[in-house]
Image 1 (cartoon, one colour):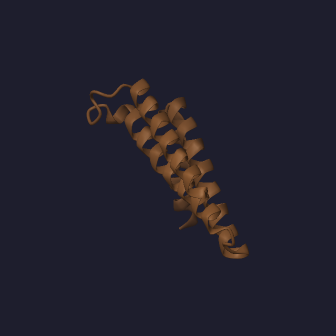
Image 2 (cartoon, rainbow, N blue to C red):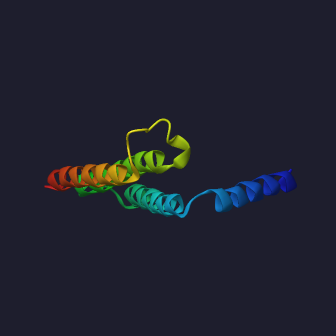
Length: 113
């Protein structure tokens, strides 16, 4: 059973390294960073408490919102999805991502108080 699992994981890793463009790999690293930040914030909340609740909520909403925006950006930039996003270039997708991120973080900063 573990040999099968190891073979499957190795095959997925090799295909990811050969078939995924560098641009998508960078976005994946960013997604991993945001995911880990959200997990650390949630673990801190569970272990220490939520005394400044607005601060915790703002940070966690920022992590979740940034993750969702980055996933949308990755979907739009992925060459396999060109038929779905025909009228959207990579530059337009990046501009939309930046604009939505600025709006998200303005809302988060406003929520902190």
